[in-house]
Length: 85
Length: 318
Image 1 (cartoon, helix red, strand yellow):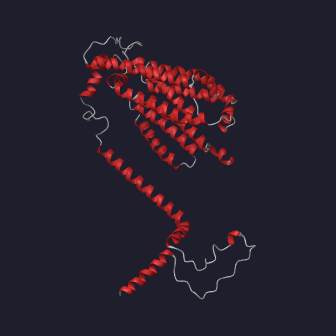
Image 2 (tube, rainbow over the protein chains, first blue to last red; image 1 turned 120 degrees about the horizontal axis):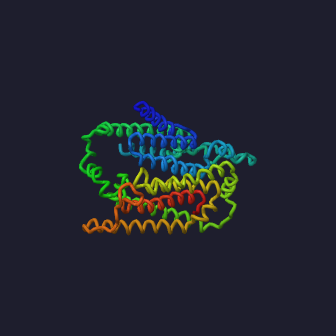
Image 3 (cartoon, rainbow over the protein chains, first blue to last red; image 1 turned 120 degrees about the vertical axis):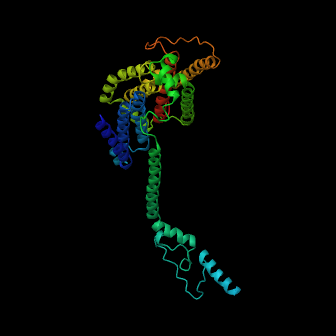
């Protein structure tokens, strides 16, 4: 169990760095989503299922949807849109 | 001495202002031929003798080196800021007590009281729900009010700009929305998953006092189902049962029920009057006193607000 926890923590750090390094904003949002998902698993391992549910619903769900919406608004949704412009 | 100083000052002043001495006997160059392109024309007749002012020289230097200097400064300063913040945070973490230690300051008599008497005092099996909706219900009320206020302000700001604009009906967003309506895969997946998501949200809201979850997370799940429905079937279909009026009425009603019921509870509790709200047996659906209705109220507010934000930012209208 300890090994899984460490793996998840390392994944968190990798995700956090990758979000800021990634050039494509869409990739950044998806990586941020996976960060929230892993964080939800870690909350379960830390015996706080309430926070896990909220993190999965808000962090991975609603926040990402709003980010996607913002990306569509500013016209940075993936390569296809950039190519058209 | 004084004269020399004044002369030096005059020279310096002229150098700064760009009005240096001009050679009187220089021949003024002839007018350029009229067919010269506009960009190659000299700026004015005296441009040859015009000595640039300090500001102009600064601007020229800035045009050549400014972007490079800015990028170097920007990178340096951002790295510096990151290093400072990271080191501050790491220093703070190093000061924290060890994780999960029994002598940590968080393990005081308050947490003991909650754990030992929480179930029998609040009637909730999920102590977290009992904590945030019974012991600390005032904070949760404030959070709901803040969320509602934010939603109403966004509605006023974005809705006002919408109503003033003439409705052209051919905006790119409408176009996109028409495109997404024809997506067969999205519609199929939405048809399958929306009932499951709605059920999940309702379970999380209604079982808030028995199992992990509660009004906020359940409301967020419900709003996700609404957003998925709006993307798959178009905003018109969602608008049929969840319009701006529904949002305002349901949120205000939920907030009023919350305020009145919790106000009664605060009043009786503070004055040591016996409350008429039954606690029920721990573990039943109808238990936990006010926690179940409060969870439903918070769920309604959160679901409406989050979906309202999505609809407002996407369509400019709920």
